[in-house]
Length: 109
Image: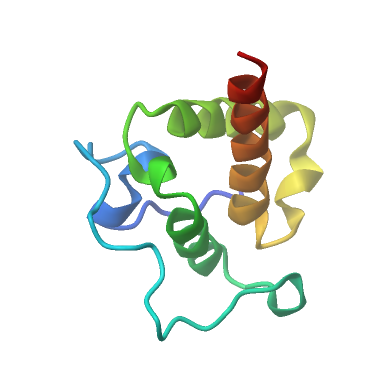
């Protein structure tokens, strides 16, 4: 499938390859990180994957709730909603979608 992107090194364990025991202790963005906006959407899925991991550090933690939800939704979309992967920023959109769902679930409890 053309939407599949290779798993990056250790920092992308949340995409199912190398387990990470805990979140990194550094903030997800440095003071020198350029702001990201929809207007500047990445044209490369690998860059989008890095941005998603910066925005949602739990995505990079193997077996975290966000990681599990992301992978489950990605597999479901591969079957039911293939057009979702037509835009290269799909990792950011999917991570945001799953994070919002998890946040809403926590608020209900």
